[in-house]
Image 1 (cartoon, helix red, strand yellow):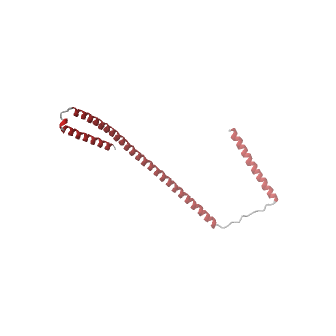
Image 2 (cartoon, rainbow, N blue to C red; image 1 turned 30 degrees about the vertical axis):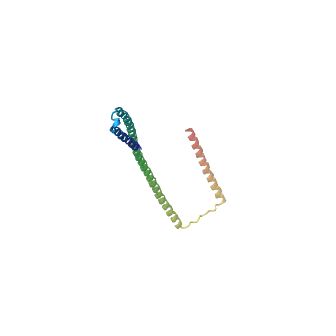
Image 3 (spheres, rainbow, N blue to C red; image 1 turned 135 degrees about the vertical axis):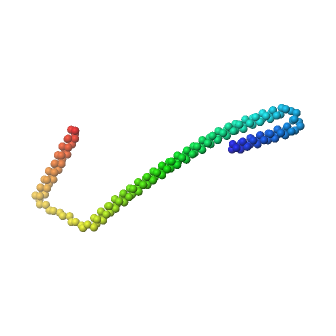
Length: 163
């Protein structure tokens, strides 16, 4: 767009130069010297406009250079983030594979144990009939064991409270 504006300005300058040449070549304007002065004012205005456009074009070029640098930095950062994501996904994939291998090994061990259990002969559960006196002896011994456990537990909690 700026190039088009510059081309339009240069085209206008060329047309003005052609008109100036035509006017200076014509016989009626050769006597008047005021015409070149007015044309020089017009060309100075055009030169100022061209210089202003050149300044704006320079600013635009500077902005484009900064934009290119920012784009380069953005692409570098994007590449770094992508490589980090690839590393994370690779680490996750490796961890999942390791857990899968561990589970496969554990599963194999469990399957071997189940297979061994299937091949062992069945054992019969033996039940004993206790006499009524032996039942009361067993209940008495169980009660003593329970009271011993409760006594130890009570003493332990008292000891903790005093600590």
